[in-house]
Length: 345
Ligand code: SF4
Image 1 (cartoon, rainbow, N blue to C red):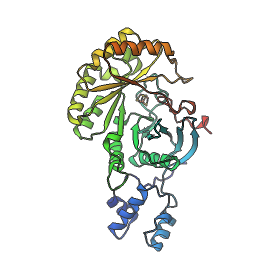
Image 2 (tube, protein in one colour):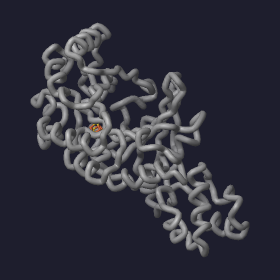
Image 3 (cartoon, rainbow, N blue to C red):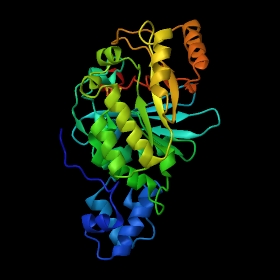
Image 4 (cartoon, rainbow, N blue to C red):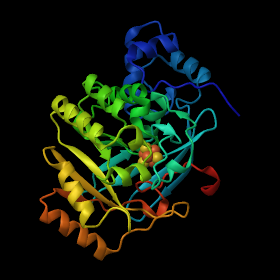
């Protein structure tokens, strides 16, 4: 059943003052600070007058517009939450823990995705809608509530293409970044794109100095167009020009996400093309073995095939890392999110 959305997340203190009809501006700032500390109800905001707290609790029993419907944890410490949004749509978000115990929130920016990348489970869904900024921040807050410590990194690598919902993503980034609030530095925030060139240009124009990750998958135009429909609109040469422009503005090295798919993109010629594409760019290639899903017609390469490919990259001086997929058993790994409630409950 559809209900009206109420959420104060991603709002500024002034907007909170106005949304709650508060008489004093400093009360909006107090509520804002409580929200960024993880308060789940007005009753815990103890520096507000008791009468005001009671009134706000009666008017808004929950601070969230979304609710957690399932929570799954993996042996490697990852956790995946399935959230039901106020209008019944479902999205997923993931908490990742690395070997040093650093915590990263992987957030969704859309319910479904229109991009249709063939190696991605979310790509099998159609786009339902863009998420509002508050729905993005609520994912972070829900994950923080189950995290064993403070979440120190955010990656927009969940469901959806973040740069197709750039206004809400930038608004959410401002909330995460605000030194008065969560105070997450821009270099701890990564936006991942499948190569949506107008979005990369817009990010550069708006001078949001986050890290950029581009899901490259192959540096061969024909193969890329077959695997990623976005390449038909913005082929590799156009993508490269946009990346050079972005790099001038951001001054940061970016990442190529390279999903290694058996028999598709990991032979010697692929290594040659990738090395040529990387030349002159400040970039590191993040190799990710394909995560298998029954809906997708691809396979994970063997260890030997991966080794052959990494040897070929090393011989060509391509700088790379291999991402160990975390959260695979709970389908929280890269490309595995699908937001299908029926299989989780
Ligand atoms: S890889 Fe990203 S852009 Fe491509 S279909 Fe999946 S969620 Fe959408």
